[in-house]
Image 1 (cartoon, rainbow, N blue to C red):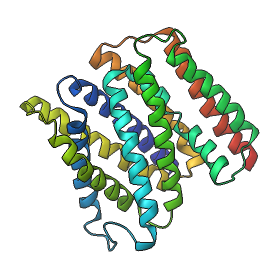
Image 2: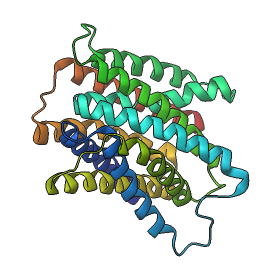
Image 3: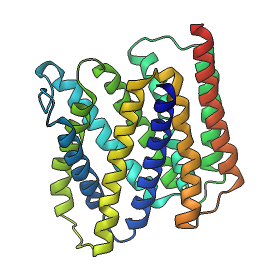
Image 4: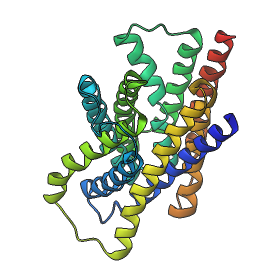
Length: 283
């Protein structure tokens, strides 16, 4: 069961990394909101198909509407900033910064939910922020903007994940995915209409691939957490940093700088510190 959960987590990380590649491949000719529309339209369809035989309300229970709306809103803002960063920055760097979201969740839980922070989490936070500083590059070169946007994306994603945690056990995962995807599709439609470009056949294929790999990544992630404890498998999600660097090099010809290697390694180490620290505190 745990092995299957690990495989699904690795598949999720690879899928999201491939999604970033397709975002980057179309960012030069396709406007941001058009990319977002295709991503969410496909994901909405996939989530709807997954829910069609389940006896649940498509848009969730009445008492969960505020939390579902906040999850969708924060998730949408995180998606916009993620797409911008992926379309304009180095894939390995962007993926590294996005992996800061679990640490953002830790800080938010401490500030607003009054949850305690362990010494391992504090050490992990410090190491992760040091890694982010290396990736951002202290020289503040021309690539700093997508890195800063990726940092904002990590914050919004952290907020969205916090709301997902608040919905755990109250809504089935497919409802949360459908609500978010449908919300994002509807909100994006008028924004896309203001600056819509007629894509070529190849670009349509690439845009559909954004949605397919985003949906596959989300589904694999959801089922991975359903098969095993988050504390046991969440660390494997950091493989996305490695996948992004490899795919960025193969498909986009992006080279990996020394500061990116150091920074990404520190973020992975930070994740390991929190992971093994939490297991030690439980045992």
